[in-house]
Length: 370
Ligand code: ATP
Image (cartoon, rainbow, N blue to C red; front, side):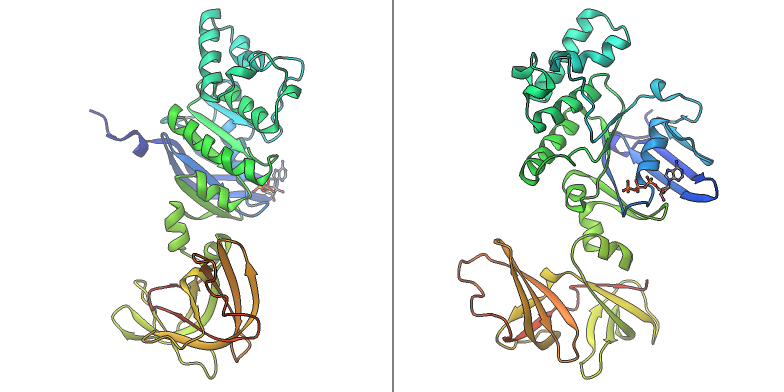
């Protein structure tokens, strides 16, 4: 009898009330988290929030001050780094310059004194997986940056770890190559079924590659969920603001029906209508988080929009597929809206200083209390 029918629901890693202190400084604060088998998991957060410390504890370079970490049901506290089924790929790929690509990939297997046949088979598999067959005999300086990145990946997967830790793996690549490589990384993760944990500063990258994302702040996890749930339903102003672009409107809430609220937010403006499944009491401070693409912009007054206001265009950023508009309201507040440029001449009629209407539905935003 298997307690988990789907391996993706079986925890591979368990942080149980883990605290990590450096002297008096608390880098990880009573953190509990499960990461499942075959997951592609991302740790996201500002510099210093503890991402690298989490990775280093998984790899065995740091030990928790309190709590325990399990790998496949076993406490890994006493297990030294080289005995863990965990590998770490660093941003500086640290390839051996004098060894061929083939030898670089074989390195860990050789060190473990694996039989020759097994090494040959495994290296060939890894070359194929990372599409490097043609480059096997070259040295690292004879291949491109993207290819070197794939060698590093092949080398770190050669010993078939249960868990691969990726610390800013694509940091050295330019944007276009980085985006292509993200898809390769996803393919390779899926093909091997290895659990990947990635640390990246780039929230778009985390959202692209990961099946789940943990947003961290000061040694704690603020929210952990799928990229879409984090984007659409942030649990706090902190998460809403950290992931993507957002308007945060401060207001006081007043119930006006079931799950429906009037938000008083600015003198001279009618209350904003917003739905919320989370209850707010009369007069409670609330923040409405609303993504720019949920706000429409038009030159004509919208018909039947629950929330509509007039303002003037302060800035326009043309981004090719999208345009972003900053609209200033009479009270000086600035609202960001974003529109897809699906038709070539779409919105040409809107320019700087133009009076415009912005509008959104009552369900367009998320009402937050913190
Ligand atoms: P970055 O994105 O900048 O790499 P991070 O989220 O990975 O940041 P960590 O490297 O995990 O952050 O560090 C978390 C906190 O712990 C930081 O405030 C850091 O200064 C502190 N810290 C990390 N290692 C040590 C150490 N060996 N001694 C003292 N403090 C440390």
